[in-house]
Length: 257
Image (cartoon, rainbow, N blue to C red; front, side):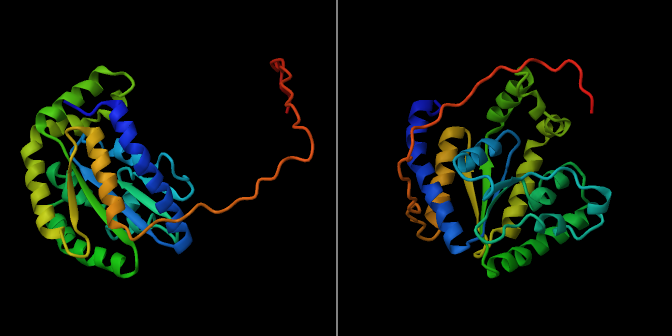
């Protein structure tokens, strides 16, 4: 049975406060934080990212979810368009899928050749080592879900008009390739699970519990991030507060400009 909403919200609240403190710490120290969210279709990447960032300043914490590369981007060094989105001092970047597309969907769906995939897997450890050596705090999460759970979530997207946009042709085609994605994941982990940039696999069959597990793990692996809120002077107004005017405006029928 999945985790109840009230139980989830009660457990999430203290973690959210820690995330806010972590964001203050990053701003104060100039830390650069990158978190990669990879995993099965429907595993819950969007919900996990939302749980991490919902109370953080969007000017400091941003999500990167790149679409299909343009013709120009496809001709560039593979990592080039991702490098442009890496954080500056004090920023937190959450990748909703990342450069690991090449080892997952591009490999399984035939969008990249075997030579391209092999070259990518050989290059990733060195690429990520450069990021870490430059001081970036890099965290890589793989969100897992059983095939039966994946099928149920795909069906929910099909039946819910508010979630239909999440159901892409690639998602439908991937239904028959669950085992292929497993093999691709294992090859990816073998090649890219390194001491300087290890993977963390999280069970997302219960998405609420998975989010809590992921956030708790992330916080545990960042240096001591306790940063007290900045003291802000908030003196009383020297006059009575002014009431706002709510005059109702009539619609403008004709506009000349």
